[in-house]
Length: 389
Image (cartoon, rainbow, N blue to C red):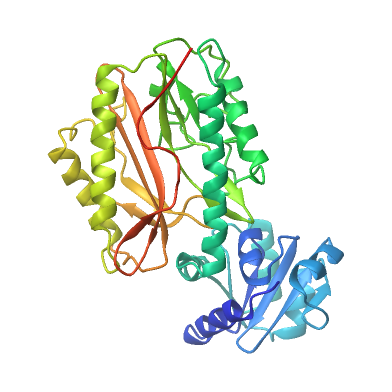
């Protein structure tokens, strides 16, 4: 169903910014405000709104519970704009995602008007989750744990990365994962999510700034490959899940047959850092404070040199991110960020360590920031898991 209170908050933003209205088209934002992901234009004024459906009218009516005049069949946004705004209107939209050709058409239709980027305000509104959103995130965490259980039950030496990833993905799907995940990027190319083993753990694709895997071909250069995994290998799984539109994000490190002592040492350090970071989280902290604290805790745990390091000599500039309708969304727990954390935010602690001998381990969990601290939402065991023959 549609969410009138969310729309009312957006209308308040329009009034505060002296905007005549908003035109939204990104599927995750339309879903957030209206309850449907059918292709649509959502036009919001300070005191009204209308959802123009480009295709899938029957689905949209069922999803939203809306009817005319709030729900109309309309492929062309210019018609919606001309019916509601005079020339010279100032409108907000998602300019981080809008194609140039669309921008030009809208600018022409507005004559002397203006298009303003409204994405930061929308993402800020989405950062604090409502109870129904948190319920969906929790269901996604159950689904992601099903993938961990599938790994424990079925991934063994002699399998390819692709076979191992497929077994985990199958577990996710049977537990309700919708089979897709979303990032706010116009040309993101990943597949189902990162899976890497052995020497591939040190191969970092340019499409993500984390352990990525190398993929099956240059066409999708991240995720599982056809590498055959051997006894003694480490492998990392960072495949997210999406349930009812909301995501869970979790990374786990596994060893096949036996775990190298160096890997166990580094992973224990990551667990210590993650536990201390979760215990320290409070509303009112800045995102940058959490990043700085993670570095401090890593030094105290004896893994300061390896913490968030990559083989190319760089260090990750973030230690986590928000999770919701997109798997990576604000706030980003990044170096220098002044963004204030608030109760109701869903965050990850996304931590890895890389040693000069090539050992790479990763630990990532999804947490809920409450009034007095953080609750761990992901359910899978957090030790480095050794899988038998």
